[in-house]
Length: 453
Image (cartoon, rainbow, N blue to C red; front, side):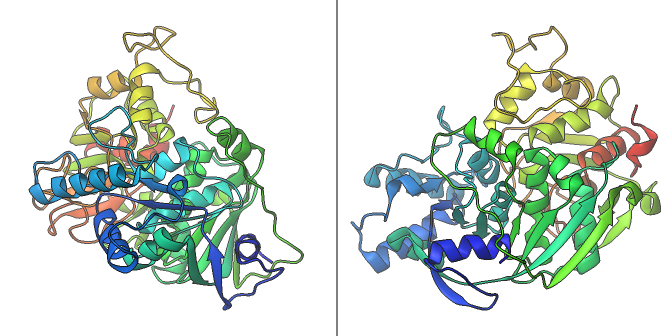
């Protein structure tokens, strides 16, 4: 069995499952946020009773993150609803906005708070819940009704997906990031090429990636229609998890000769930086093909491109320079925001997403006296935002970084459909943080190979 099949079999109490099997499985973790949390809770109360108990309060995680820094009354009402429900049910894992417990984007916070446990099952009311599969677990998005059923029973019915395997061989060149790898895959198989399939990533280049970079790969499995994205857990995975939680878990390995419905091998030494052109994530082009395209703004953020290492990559290019277009920097989490303020650029090749942060001084300067990453972005002329989903989902009119007209944008986000970042008239190019930073400096789409030092 494949890695996905092995995990599902264990949670169904079976020795074996095959693609196409319909099974009931136990759910280890359920996550919801401010957009889908209220309707999920409404369905839960309707079906199980106004005073019904959540199946396991320790396994329900509620992370407001999408529409939170806004005056929109509907968005604010959602937060109030979640706050009241969490208080009524005495939920330990509600991370309220406006408090010291607030975390930021749910997918990044799940990793930071130690909920991504190898070998487990994690469901969330968000399509990018597949991000957590980077930790060797089965993780996928579900609708509000399915989430409400999990909330009441701790179980869900699933059909076992077929598995597609993508192997990246060789040593990753310094101008490539995980974003280039996943955009290449999506460009190859299309928006529906992975529909209801597991996308498994393997190979030397994948296991050389940090955990944050692996999260970028699995995060965008859904852009090809994938049921889940997954990477086998290794020593790097366990080091990350053990530094953040003492919750028990069991690493799961594929059993026997795994069978894949599709398999493709890439030589990363032969790959080059790519973008997804408007208005589809599979509308791939090499950066060299679109180089010189005029831009109005650049955006670095989201669950896909707002992790600490994404900003380290961008800062290496922006340090000592000034951006030529409006450039928005939106950390994915409060932890990332803190580290940007307290840490400087690490030495090239240094690990930045291991067990703990390097730490800084009390006044926010890096411990080594160097300029902080936050200051590097400010000095470059970037506009800094609060930790959140920001403009990735468009949002209310006062959302930070939202497009409002016919802007041409280059962004580290995950989708570029019309209206995704605000205005339906805007055109969004998806790219890696390296490509976005290089392009922000010139005001046109720019190959990072020409500016990396």
